[in-house]
Length: 343
Image 1 (cartoon, rainbow, N blue to C red):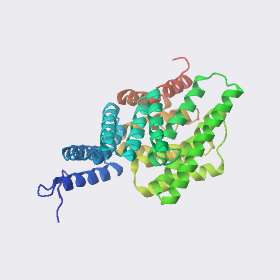
Image 2: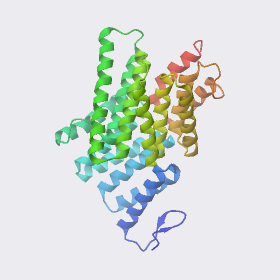
Image 3: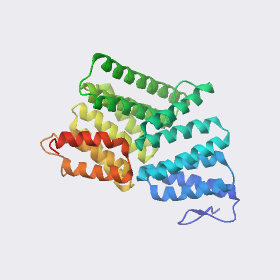
Image 4: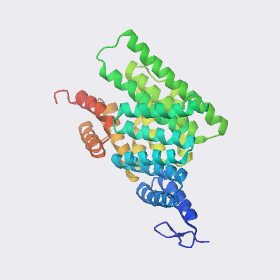
């Protein structure tokens, strides 16, 4: 039986509208997670229109979230934010608390990337309030938990960057913040093990890896052997899921952890693979992260593994400004000042 007219991924007209919407959703989701972002976002937007035409707010909320994540990776952050708000609106109309929770956290992720830190914090806290009010737990888990932990660790890092000197009380606050994030990651791991969700296990390991990198950058602590093994397992798990955007993020985290551990060759290998995937999939957002990460980690080595840290920084700035990726504004300025102190 034929379901789609190739190659436009259009369901055949003889199918019922709800079945056509479902086919578009499944095809768009598959294209998105396997790295075919531009094809995926186009099909997902058609699926969104189809579910809206069916007045199915629950499914429309899911598809709007997937479409906004595709646009986020492509670097269309303004459009991603618009879709995130649309997703929340559909979730509210669905009257389903589980959708309201997930779509609120998804909006928090976009606001974080847009540099709207106060709005992101309020939105994540709102999602966690839904969770606690329903008696579903204390902390966000799965994708929502990963997005929130990423935000919390960013906040700790930015606080460190703003302090020229650290008092004992500030150091204690940072260590306590790291402890709380690791507590969240441990809960994510336990929940993932209960349900045997490979992607959730990998994301929990990524949170631990991110916490290691923040601790290394703030306190100069060398990552442990266990941390290296944990991030390596995270990348292996993400590779098994086939989800290319998560794999690139995992490779970035592993490169950071290995670099701080003095394992330069492995760190460079991870960045090389991350760039190959991000470039082939047109992940503009993650290409900005890769270029900035390369310059920050390796500008001091004798033989820079790429053309030059200045060129990578210029590329990172161009992508950050082009995408409106204001989450990285302060880090970019900090790295530029370190590499070009007279600038």
